[in-house]
Image 1 (cartoon, protein in one colour):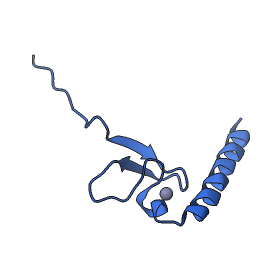
Image 2: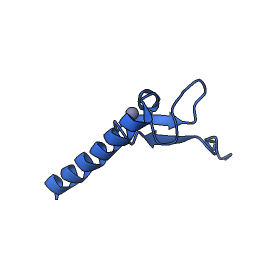
Image 3: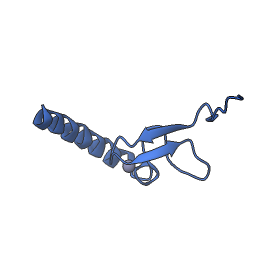
Image 4: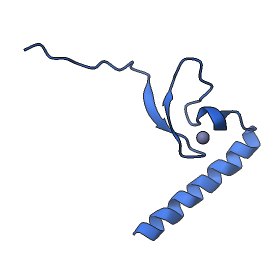
Length: 68
Ligand SMILES: [Zn+2]
């Protein structure tokens, strides 16, 4: 029986945006998404992205605390 392998492009991966937590695929054609940010957040000014990323991390850690 021939084995059917789904071949993913080596560099293509499912990512989670570090700012808004949205799932996205990177790299994708015609997408402005970066390695760490989805297409929407990649367009934010770097200073905003930095602050929002910090807040997202804080929310993450607070959520973890609530769950444990
Ligand atoms: Zn995002």
